[in-house]
Amino acid sequence: MNISPGKIIRLPQLIQSFRTNIQKQKKFMAASVSLDLAEVNRDDSLTDKDVNKIMSYYGLAVPAFLGEGFCLLRGKQMTATERHQLTYLGALTGLFDDFFDEKNMTKAHILELINTPEAALPANAHEALFLCFYRKALNGNNPALIKEYFNKVFDAQVLSERQKNSSISKEEIKEITFRKGGISILFYRSVFEEAIAADEYKLLYPLGALGQLENDIFDVYKDHQEFIKTLATTTESIQSLRKLYVSLFSEVLTLLEQTDFSVSNKKRFAAFVSLIGARGLVCLDVLQQAENTTGGIFELDSYTRKQLICDMDTRSNQWKLIRYYSKKNYEL
Image 1 (tube, one colour):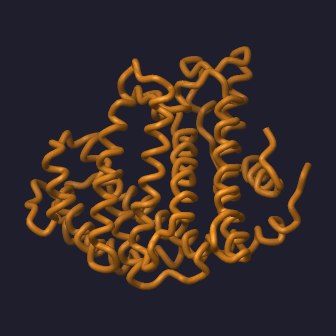
Image 2 (cartoon, helix red, strand yellow):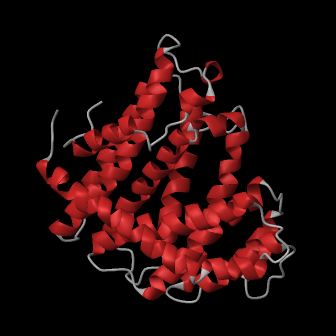
């Protein structure tokens, strides 16, 4: 196996930094978001699922992983203002998604919440919490830029509704996937003090696309059950899906090398991206095993939930993660 010694050396430090970042973010949320949640949700109208997406997923992961990744690249720790804004943007993400997926809100009302949050009147606790989080997210760096990217996130979300159409083409699915991921990562990046340079923009868009593709690979069972067409649910070959994934990852590393960030910062960021990207390859291995049981053709209706769910906490998958991370290149 083609091993990169530099990656191996950085791995323990990287894993420890993840743990530290998570604990730091949990402490911040306990003194901020959790208090807002308790204040707005006095009638307990929000579900456990809503709370979990806020406290254990988006509100936690966006700052602790994505935000800290930005900081590795620029070589400077997150400021208190950046953490505050990024936390609240992360916390409102699940609420925003539900506007489309569960609440059946009109697009005009959603745009009203995005563009005039100071004047918008919430119709329920869900909207009230969204506005609470959003107003706090705008209280800091670049509020106009945040709104600009939020409108682009809205456009991408509207476009993604096409993924429920059985006649959608694979090329359109790919375009929607890449746009949704690319715009989302730029949305979160907008809270940072530094302007987004052209070379960083070129890097972040495909990086966001890679992240969205990875999410779709992990969510293949859920999306199939909900009749959502993604690159993972429509593929007939996991090998072809892996080829796209690896190609996108290689593009990210090439564009990273072309940025003007310091060499040391780029190496740290490459190690961070490699560990995140390796998760997708482990999940692809799980899907490949399922495909092997149906004669080399990926047939979702033929598999059980267990065959399609990738548990990253098992020893075997953790070992695979380390092996993939340690490679100089992600061989097919």
